[in-house]
Length: 323
Image (cartoon, rainbow, N blue to C red):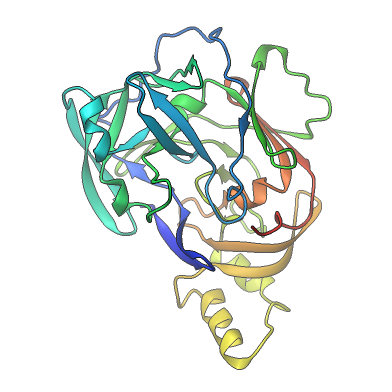
């Protein structure tokens, strides 16, 4: 089904969505037996690109000292590593298939090593996937070596404070919810699709442009505002045409879905709040609504994954300032 999609930005080509579907029936998705009382990492600085068309990147460390820059991706069910890290791993346990808009590739299933954030070990699943990451994401500096998925993130209460430029690990059992914004119950249950088992967080809410579907996937691996139903894009495109003839023509082709491009729209109203300058793509028919990092970055975001709750506090109507 889904899905690695691409879009061109001012500074080159970046991945718009890292939604990826693994055939995980063979891989397994079992949590580690570590206690949820493990110490929490210190605050982490949010990289400047995150929420500005780039990914949220966290650098973890393997037990042997190897540093691993990873994309924090709530749309990914498992940790994925680049094949360059194979010397740090043990024997391959089995194979699995990774599907994307660029075809598919066979990945290896390995026992997950211990990952550290600073000096603190992180909880994760028992397995991870290894593949050729260059086939999924474009080159970066430093090179991205992995994707940090929900088998790790689901153990933590994480706050993304883009105004302060900090990601915080909070104590879910003693969370002061006053001032965190509106509460959205998170659905974290596994679902089996035609190509495997997918675990990803979603909320029971219409998409950024409304529409008929009433479920939205929360995907920090999507570095635009999100994805929506195609018919909703057409409804909201009135008044979005500007510039010269060629610019308006390209916009029309994107609005109608005749070219595979994201669509910029002047505004939307979501959950009673008006947001300006949004960029959305078309979601797949079975899950059209996705809320991405560029939209989340307009808020103070708190993911209390242990309690299946997300808090959103609007901070700004428009996107973060450019780099």
